[in-house]
Length: 286
Ligand SMILES: Cc1cc2nc3c(=O)[nH]c(=O)nc-3n(C[C@H](O)[C@H](O)[C@H](O)COP(=O)(O)OP(=O)(O)OC[C@H]3O[C@@H](n4cnc5c(N)ncnc54)[C@H](O)[C@@H]3O)c2cc1C
Image (tube, rainbow, N blue to C red; front, side, top):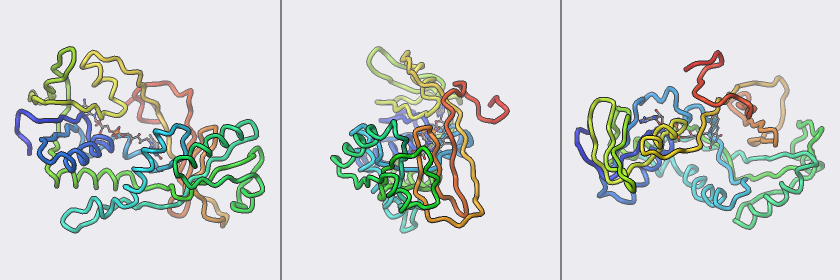
């Protein structure tokens, strides 16, 4: 267990973002003392364990496409990349593709986005309604005018990726502390130390806010208002009795999204009108 009182980088939150930052810091700056503070090693409420693991290049913004051009090959190779003493990670990457479908009113936006993606090296296949029907005959295309398929995209097991990053980060020297950040000592331009629920104070050269849905609370510790509000989402598993062709990860403009999962599918519809706040259960409350 880490019992030191100082580090170079203190990462607040050890979910997929915090553990990824820890891994890359440990790999690229091996001399740095990197400490991840995570109160719940079971990740019971973390978003990472609730995610469906989709990784896509279908964005409108070049910066997002560039990040995916880096991260998708990384995830695809993560079993080996994150191996420790020859034992691979278990990321379960599936190169199943992503399919965005739109109605007539959104065809020009989809076409523009497809152009941006192709300009950034993405294999993005334009499918009009006939081509969609030929490729995915089980789909009911009422109200669907076109789609874009990116066959090199896919999905992974988010917990497998998290555990792989965490294990490899530790193997490279990063430390995990089972504790909660309750305050950050700071001046106008820098954060100098994190204070933990156990009473410990950890002096640090830098703080990384990787607290996910709680990031706003961490930012408030340095008097920085962040416009982040948690939004409850649901993920459902369902099956169909029909035998149909293999489907990619399918998304539409109403924010419906689903992908194959074992004998069925995993997916959900984001309700943008959901009240913001910490609400982890269907019945409300935490
Ligand atoms: C239903 C659903 C489906 C999703 N599907 C996808 C998908 O297909 N593809 C995709 O890319 N994304 C998806 N996401 C989004 C994805 O899950 C998140 O973007 C990602 O997991 C965020 O990771 P994180 O590390 O920032 O947050 P988290 O995983 O929530 O980790 C934050 C950590 O911070 C810790 N923490 C909180 N407060 C403190 C404190 N005071 N001190 C120290 N630690 C603290 C928490 O314990 C937690 O472990 C989905 C999300 C949901 C809910």
